[in-house]
Length: 179
Image (cartoon, rainbow, N blue to C red):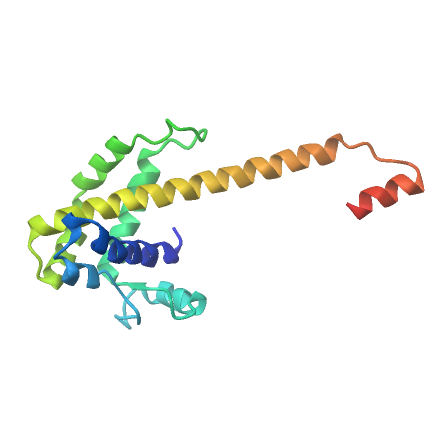
């Protein structure tokens, strides 16, 4: 999953705290998810932070290592649970997916580390984790459908190219080269 997604999820959570009452009062937790400047110089996330730094025009957020690992684990569970044989509305069972994500040991582990860093109560942090999971499923769903749409569009274009008759005349060849 693209590293920009990590910062996007963190940014959306920051904006959601002003709109949703159940996300109010967890500002210290929200601030622990991502920063404007990269942290953890000697961590394995360094490679991804360098890529985000190159892509950023000072607007992207850098995920903290635990949030990075949390979202990566969400992506792993999504790939394990979703059926990618054909893209349809039934390809992802959101309830089963959310349940699998909430029950994951690694997600709970990384989330508890984030809670420790922010000094937030666990009961106050659960709506934030729920929002992260729902937002991730939405973003990932849009990415999968976008990719499938592009694949189908390319397939359709290649079929159209094959079905066109090759003209033997100079005028016909000029027409096809102009398109």
